[in-house]
Length: 296
Image (cartoon, rainbow, N blue to C red; front, side, top):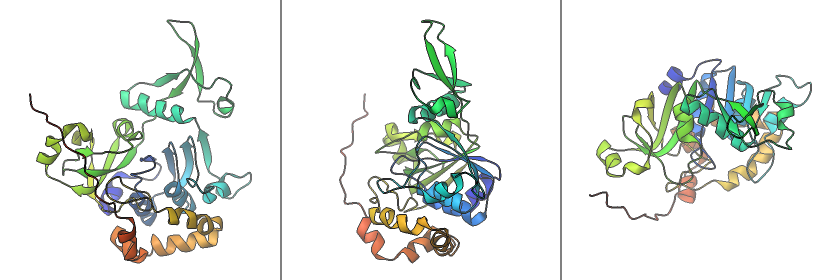
């Protein structure tokens, strides 16, 4: 992870750490914090704790997003502190609807300059975001909204398994991982397991990202905690609840970063500090899905 982040994430980049409810790579976020790579524009549909930690570390100048919060619990307190009027180190915010962010990545992944939406009618969002524009449909004459393409400098995705070439397989909720990879200039794939290419080829429909787009492949088991990885480990709901108090004050927030991010060398050190009971408590129980016959 250290090598992948050092090579692919640069000061001033637009960064996208993907994942929707699961497959959110906290390990990558923590390594970016340890390396102090700043002046970032952080883009994501649903920035949660990992982006808030980048904010608290002082590495984010702007956030492009559609929803932000501690899922099911409350606010992102670093974001609140840095988005209030007159806040020191205030972060610039660029807000869209969920589908508006999806559309930006669809345009970026397709090599198009913008994407049209039959959306935003009656919404206040266009009044706060001048990048949301209007066009007339050349076929129906209907007025449509548009959003510009989003092409991150670097996208980081987490997956259940990948081969060494970066052919990444995902199951469960997909989010916009594929679009985020195809839209990006540089790509890091982080995997729970590294498997032989022959296994990837035996189940090709699960391959979400082809290796030809990938710059780095990182083997990082438990790289998403406290998020979850379908089939590997559960969401650490206790952590999210406790995070409300940890993150509410800058002092306790910084203490957490000092201990669990700066205070360890890598993800293995993080897991050791989190305690041996963590893995036993969250490890997924097997629930196998029967394979299919691809013969003809």
